[in-house]
Image 1 (tube, rainbow, N blue to C red):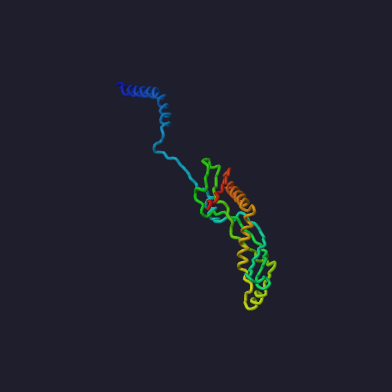
Image 2: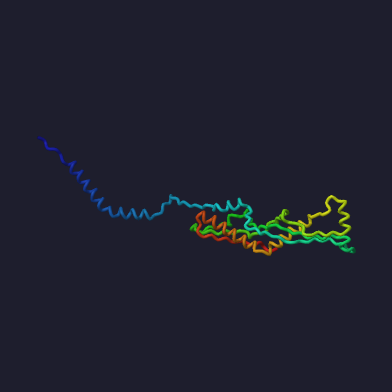
Length: 223
């Protein structure tokens, strides 16, 4: 019976043994290489950055003009027309008028730029810069305003018999508007408007997740 050659089996066993020794020798280096490659930054990777425009800016611009406070006022105005050389009972007109109305203080949001909203790097605080409140046009309440007295000279009374509108109260109304505006400047209307605006924005922005809210008002430049 012929014997089977064992040369191939010996060579295969020898190759496997050498491979096992190489693996055992290189194992510590392979672990270190993993740390080394892990420390090298990925040149082909990407990072995500988000910049979200605060939604409050668009909301404020949509408001356009925010009426932050209102003052209910009344004042008495008097308009007189006297003749130069005649006594008032002959020619002249003297009217006393009780002007009742209101004046609002408003904040203009329509022209706010993106720089008006400044958010802190951690996204927890926000600062809003606004123009200072200004006085809106007075509103004269004609239903509650009234003429207190009207004295007219003889010439004016006789002349009024021949005209469809013997008394023109338009100048009286214009003077009343100005009187209401002047009266508003003697109140704390502007300060109340600042307080109300700050409260409104603080509630709005905290509802959007901001923890600290600062509202600043820029006074108009001196003429």
